[in-house]
Length: 144
Image (cartoon, rainbow, N blue to C red):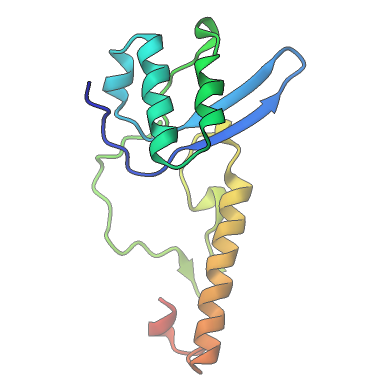
């Protein structure tokens, strides 16, 4: 069976709710492949993605114990990705930079806006530090 194209490694989140334990596996797997597969095949595909990404075997075993009746399959991206996009999108203007949810179109159920914000802040700090060390902090072309 074709495992679909994966564009980024999966992420796995574990949590609990008042009613049950919850495992969220976010993986960029061809949605048509998932939709046309049995729930057992979806689990097998997910286990393979975890294994290929270097996750410990315990996570794959945990997925194998999943309750198929409670498995929810949905597209990761809710916005069309085939829309034409400018190659050099400007995410900043003067002293303003988009970060977190403002810069990353993702579904709210992933609760990743804060994490993206932290990652964006780190990237900004690294870039500014590099510009400062190179005495280029006022160079608008370098900042872009």
